[in-house]
Length: 248
Image (cartoon, rainbow, N blue to C red):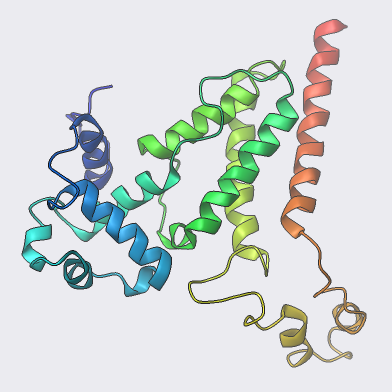
């Protein structure tokens, strides 16, 4: 794929991510390079959080002047785009067509969740549309491969992968225990039910108050897995419907 965005359809930072994929790594591990800058920025965001990341702090960690970074990364937006693209890593079993679409898609979704758990800051970077960077597109390609053996139409396969990707984003943001910020442990995080108990009263929230009193909110459950199975149940109904239409 050409990385020359001649008609200007790609955001500049995304276009530069594609261009960086075509350039071979340069220099040693100790020499300042785009790859080393991005790797250090990811480590910093993992440990300190994205809001704390600045070009000045990154330069201090790398032992160089701030302006030296701009010879390799043009803007802060470019740095964030490169970090996001790199942090995704390789998707599970790329280039492989699986026999069990549901097991494959479940693994795909669970491993994508793992990416966000390792790098919670990824969900703090604003997105303005569907994936465009090569790292995200490789995950989309892998998700589509999970559905290649079904009777779903191409449009339906694409919609399912977008649905699963959206579920991971929503599930990680809404689940109280799905993600932890840097420096937090499960013991140090206030339990959601405990917080609600101080915010609501039985008269205004009778059902929710009952759940809090019964300990349901803070019970050791995995909301992400429960929701994932329900979403997959719905996709399976569609898959079986299409199979029935084919054999009828």
